Length: 314
Image (cartoon, rainbow, N blue to C red; front, side, top):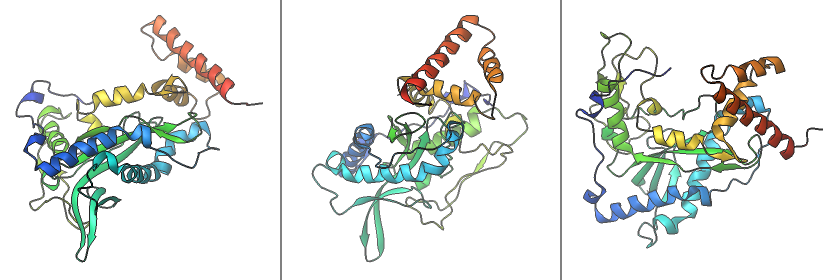
């Protein structure tokens, strides 16, 4: 369900991104380099093992099954294209390591006698484009103070090369300053969102001692005073933070067909729906415009034709 927002409050005292020109010179170069490397993921990402044998109606759950493996492969890809983010080997002793139980869960670090020394972090989340939710399932509750100015939060959309089978491939990721994303989330929760009950408190409790690169035991999560729907931290709801990225990603072509149309196709075939029920769902998708219904139905018919061509069901 789409939550109501106060459009006038969206710009009042809204947070602003940190100017990268204020970063130390070496961190600015690293920040720009990692941005470039993340943008290049669709070119360099390679997942060796193809996926097959999953019922089409079970594909919605693939992010749960494969999400961690995709994120591990993203980290390996980043380390494999060091020449993009560290062309002068300024950080030759450092590599990206994944630590799923800590924030951020991907850290550029080196091992020392005292432990890992971290200089840069990325909070990373994969998003399977055919997942039932239709948006990333990212939960982001970290306090702004737990983010270094140059840290990033990144969502990598992915899909299977043959839609319902094949090798995982990735699309253009969403990349944002981690601190700004946390600040915008808090601003949206307190000032932009309109709770169903106007008397509900909208405040948040921020951990007092949060600092960058915390240990697993450190308390760095922001806690809302009231969150009956368990929606705090869902960044896709904190509009318009991810709107453009989500819209663009859902138009990612898979076998020449937009991901959003694949979602529709899989959704109407869920729950063992028979042919008649599927047809009714197609016709009911948009009752306000016959032309839109016919156009969407034609896209679905085209999808079925393409599937029949791509796979041998005999």
